[in-house]
Length: 99
Image (cartoon, rainbow, N blue to C red):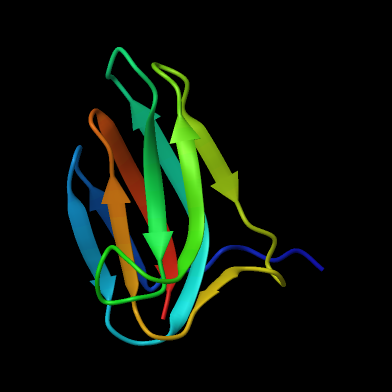
């Protein structure tokens, strides 16, 4: 049986910013991040209404080397409180979620 990722929300977070993507429980299905800074920077996802507290994942993104994470259908990244994303200098991220 073939399964496809179904997304009810798609979210883009610009460089050096904080995005509050959800204020209720949901799932992260995929993370795509790029960095155009001369030094690597991070992209962190938090199960919180702020960029602090319970870290779901912290990805280091190298210059001009995109990070693409597609989570298996039956083992998504779950957030229970909310979903907040913080990006470092030069990092842009696209987060596929289901809520």
